[in-house]
View 1: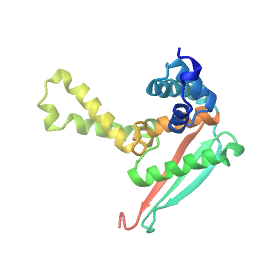
View 2 (view 1 turned 60 degrees about the vertical axis):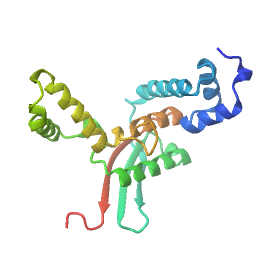
View 3 (view 1 turned 180 degrees about the vertical axis):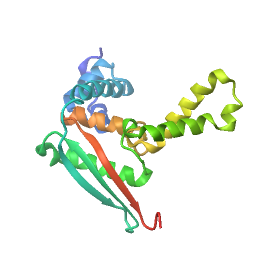
Length: 202
């Protein structure tokens, strides 16, 4: 462990900006990681996931329904994000998360909130489509299943909100929400969303 005086305040500040964790949590993580910023980020994420797992079963019936209209008025999103209490729903931290999520839906057009929310028939149809691909059929039979599952995972990263990369960061939307759960202290979930683009389906 590094002596506490060797942890620079600007390193703690950068870690706070990257993770949203509290000052003391960041300082402790940096001390534990011997001043290694990337390792400290990983430690805080792991702790956040553990905290989120504990809260995952708790009911989230409060929250907000928010809208985002892209400049120019040709694209709009309505999103419902749930938390456990009305108090948290009104906080700036939660409101910012909801805005970020609405903008993510506007920008990357996911079709489903989570992998679990993909209808079974849609998943089965996609698997069949991948398995029937002539390029896959040309591969040795024993590796076709593995290749198809890898391609299915890539498809999920495109169409599932929680699996998409968040903006230009190295974290997924799911990890962003997990970090928010750890920071805010309540279960949070995206229940549903709808995205409208002017003139589509006409």
